[in-house]
Amino acid sequence: MSITGVGRLFSGKPVHPIGDDGRMALSDHLRELRSRIIKAALAVVVTFGIALFFFDWIYDLVVDPYFAAQEQLPDGASEATTSGPAGGFLLYLKLCGLTALVASCPVWLYQIWAFILPGLHANEKKWTAIFGAIAGPLFIGGIVLGYVTLPKGLEILIGLNPDGLTNLVDFNDYLTFFSRTLLGFGIAFEIPVFVVLLNMAGVLKGKTLGAHRPWMIVGTFIFAAVITPSGDPFTMSFMAVPMIILFLISEVIARFNDRRRARKGINAGLSPDEASRLD
Image (tube, rainbow, N blue to C red; front, top):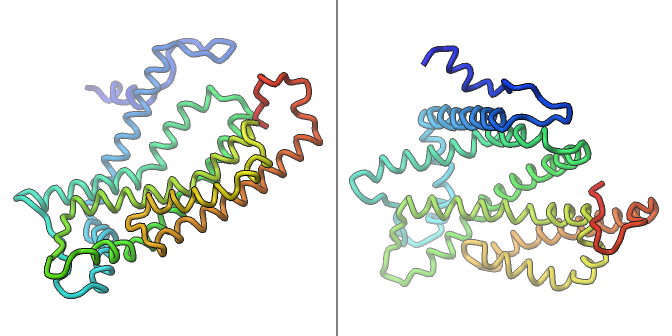
């Protein structure tokens, strides 16, 4: 393929005239989609290559929670292993692959955002940007909290092993456990953002949140007990308490927004079956 052909793959610019209403031809949409997928995939591949050079540092970061838990257990209670002749090779691939997906997320998330952005109204663009700016730090905060609580959770889980038996932790299983735990913490911290979004859309009222607050607190602890790696009170509370605080903040925001809407009469004239606009 010529250099010009490669450039066309990356450009994604429309080749047909854009209508007065901003509509593009289907072939131009597909061309842009192809371009953005290629850019996102290239970012993952490049990041994967970089991760190979920093494998030792990444490996230490991932296994530190396990070794921190192992230090608190009796000698011989647990050992980390890889299985099969290709165990070490698969370890490299999986760990660097996961790192590449995470590290390149700003690039491929931007490609997704840039593809759907032209189809949004100005008001939708504004609120999408605001919620994205809030959701990002909350997700990262959830992951950090999950990483901090992981050693204690592992200590309790492995400590349940009967005396005289050694718990062999296969790295592939550990990596799956590690990623799911951190992902669970990150997603859990997004729930308050979703609650506020429902309120902004007029689906959920602040008074409704207040009326169901006791059940929400109980449900949060149950959710934390299910999603945390060990289910012990320490780890469960580490997730549940921040979630409850975030929920209470979202309730305050919802009540404030309801009062603001009432003052502006923003929903005046709407039928009961007509959704209020996101403002």
